[in-house]
Image (cartoon, rainbow, N blue to C red; front, side):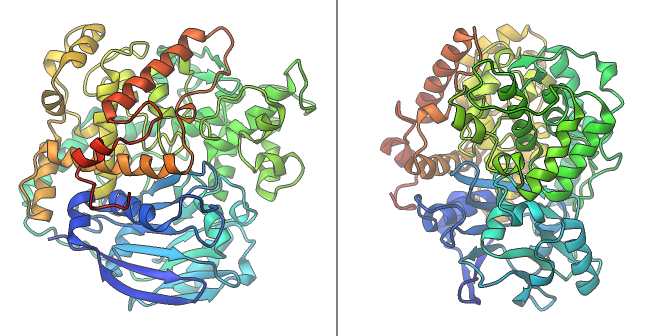
Amino acid sequence: MYSPTLVTLDLTENKVIPKKSIDPKIVDTFLGGRGITVYLGYESIPVDTSPLSPENKIILGTGPLTGSVFPSSGTTIATFKSPHTNTLCTVTVTGHFGAYLKHAGYDFLQIRGQAKSPQYIVIDEFADISLEDASSFWSDSIEKTDEILRQKYGQKSSIACIGKAAVNKVIYAGVVVDRSHHFQRGGLGSVFASKNIKAIVLTDPPKPLELLDVTEDNLSHIKSILEGHPWSNMLKTQGTFSTIYSIIKADSLPTKNCTRKLTLQSDQISSFHGYGEAYDCWHCPVKCERNSYQKFVALGPNLQITDHKFIQGAIKKCDDEGLDPISTGAALASLFQIQEDKRKLLNIHLGFNWGDPQIYSLIDDIINKIGLGDQLARGENYLYKQTSEPSPMVKDQMLGMFYYPNCPALSMDLSSSPYGANHYKSGSLIYPEFHGFPFQLSPLSIKGKIKLKILFENFHAVLDSLILCPRFMPMFLKSNLILGNIPSGLTGLLLQIMPKKLLQKLLGNFTHLTSVINQQFSSTGSIKDILEIGNRITLLERLFNTRAGLTPSNDVIPRYLEGKSDFYKLQNELISSYYEMKGLNSDGLVKLTTLKKAKLLGIIRI
């Protein structure tokens, strides 16, 4: 039975507060991973805390399946207050780090305070936690830092570290794990730097943990679902980049900072293959290619650049330094956009225009915070705030890369995320709209989408609490032959009138996952019960962020497009419907009756 513990590292006092068991009521309420880290963040991080102050906390979490033979169970989650969005933020990294952390005996590791000088954290083969001096390589690149630490602790260590961008407090700098995996959105790297932490090193390679009571047949069936799903095949061949073909077909590929749609032919982008290698993730049979739609578009078509060689170079530069490519691309696009503004509220003269790869030279300036890079390092919305010019940013952060008017429900799905438009925690409507999982829906239609959005966001929170790879989400959506063989417009109408209980049965493949969860928790929970856990988690996130100042105006895309009044009217209608269906009032605040129904009263501080 899953009985997780929490250990706290106090950097200010340079001491480890011994393990304590997490209350079983909290485990039953929030499951693990994202659920428990969000709960711990909600209870211990003051809503008015400055994200780069010692009072902010980093809570690293594992889940009940972490480190086992379950596919991709080496994933790790981190919760903290984001310097980028000023919201409680949760980011996920795949790979092996979570398996190492669980092997060391730490289900949840809370890091608080601030070290007196640059340090790195070591968790050795005896599970002892210590701080070591990082002064000599504090400003080194991620590559150099990783090399130094592996020479000292061994090539089989798992290392999460920051580079120059984070040390210089670029607010969208992330943390790179084992050189190829990233805590990328939200600015976790700059929070590491604010605490004077350069890296976390886990030295002892783990062995797979047995999943007691989980039958080999059940495990084999889940693996077969993952391996045989069409989305899995797409990930193996082209990674998430494979999404681009459907988006081109739906006329939703963005350019000019998402203010226009870009017309491209598939053969203009088909040969792009990212790193040309697969991700190495703990016991994962899928082996996704390291090739990302979001990175490609943010640093390519959105800047009107389509030359693969230049785009790949820009992606690599961002990845190598842990910069969020979406925010980096949007920051660069803001320069082009403001430069061509006829009102010239802010005089920017780059000497080149949209489509010129010279813009990539500014990535180094962002990393080092020099010249224009110093302003861009403060976020993609920073320049717009100086000009009062309409901006496409939501919660100061760029959404995923789409031409939003051509996918209005997906746009609202992204903009309403409490994470500041983090496309890994919201935006799941992309699967039915662009891939046909579990059935095809038109991107232009809004019928039935809010009900589906809530179901998906709750399910995503459950996967994050187990903690599994976020890319697995559509693989647990069982195709429905009836809905799959009728026109997508009629499908939307059926979704609108379909009872919630029947809609949940769309997660047909989820029943096998439910069985695994029940075996880990000695419970008999149904799909409905499991999804309610996800609902509690998302409500708690919103509760924190509305107290931190989140309002309905932060939940919709601001008016930055000319001649699109119908689109913005639709966004407001969609968010109102979402609030009502989610149990929020018109100000986006969680109702007391909703908290009571979700069984959160008596569990959390109100």
